[in-house]
Image (cartoon, rainbow, N blue to C red; front, side, top):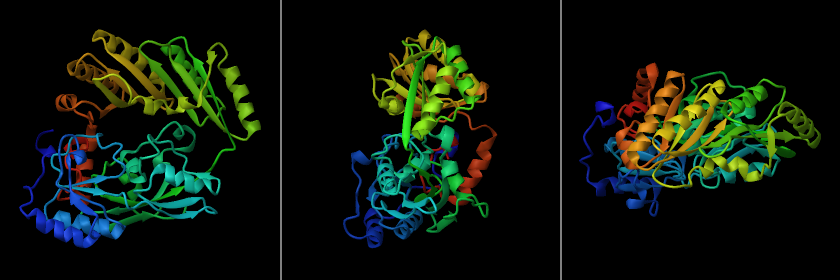
Length: 433
């Protein structure tokens, strides 16, 4: 990644004590401290941790840090801090822990305004009091924060029916490195005017600004939720079932495939709605899947993505994206490639062609080799492979993000517009942004 992964300026020469005094004046006593080894990001240990209590304090803290030449790492629940490249530098961790309120639940309009440090579970509990929800199923909802979920663009099986974060987010407030609080969108479900800041912030890994607030469109809580699971003969049969479902009149709120190196693929389909509606959908699904073996479908089936973080080491966890018609071929290629180096693997994929794969191997070199083979195969077929979790040795030997294609110059220009001093998360994003 060459010179782009390094900072464009020298480390700050301002004494830490002076910076701490300025920052403490913003957030108050008790919300600024020296960082410890537990605050390290991929082996890079910052100097200071700050916990602003308002969006204005976030903006002022960022402005002060930028003027002092500090590099800032935004942090929510710290559930995904290992995602991305190691930072090229880290001086200040900016925690959103205190920005944890649900500011407004306009239940009649089916919108909610929430601060970035609010956990997903806390938001859902508040919305459920009026029979509503944010129709999203991210990883680790108990501890993952709204800001972190947006910054990493984390979503699950619900998106097949109810859309991704880009469909659900209608407004956002970002604190920029120069101290500006930039707002876009609003409490209207249809919003076409102005610069689309919400879509730009989603998945930006905290490299453009620190998310302080978000406004979401909501959906009603379903009256009933029912699931079916099936075991397919092989990978081509799995692909056929997925495509047949997508082409049918079924309207599932989840359609996922679970596969391992040692078991036949399994397919889960979930329906939500009234009891009568679910029964009708199930009857249709059973007709559609005739010839495929039905198996039990426990509730934890839909927690399969999070279970990929458990297993033997060394391991890597990757996010893959491909055309839905290519799921079966990808599983075949994964099996062939992994067998060569005696790797075991588990996949949890969605019918829309996005999923996670966990690879466990005898050593890091075998993992690196397999990741490169899988990435090459996917990129040749208009897909992608991104490393989410891996040992430091693997990160040092392969690129976390893979190819950005011809989008990289545009992304660098956007970074330069929002963060010309490379204050935020330097080097962590694609291409060393």
